[in-house]
Image 1 (cartoon, rainbow, N blue to C red):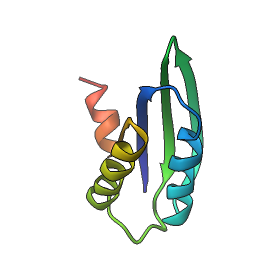
Image 2 (image 1 turned 30 degrees about the vertical axis):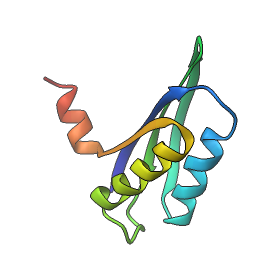
Image 3 (image 1 turned 120 degrees about the vertical axis):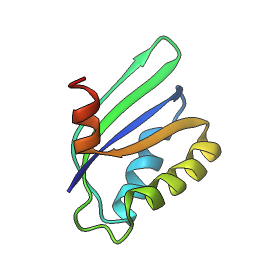
Length: 89
């Protein structure tokens, strides 16, 4: 099972480190990643394998909400199928 993780916020040190460390802790594997800086904004999208995670997507999102507040970004996760369906419409 795979999911799409998006992270957007003012650029600062440690965003990738914090998000990727959390994903490692829950045994999610980052399969692909793209990130860029748009003026002062950090933008990242990841394709993540969550098949070995004990946590489900809603629980991961709750953790992302906490992390987002701590580091000042907006981190979101959604199942790959939902992401693909949304972009076909």
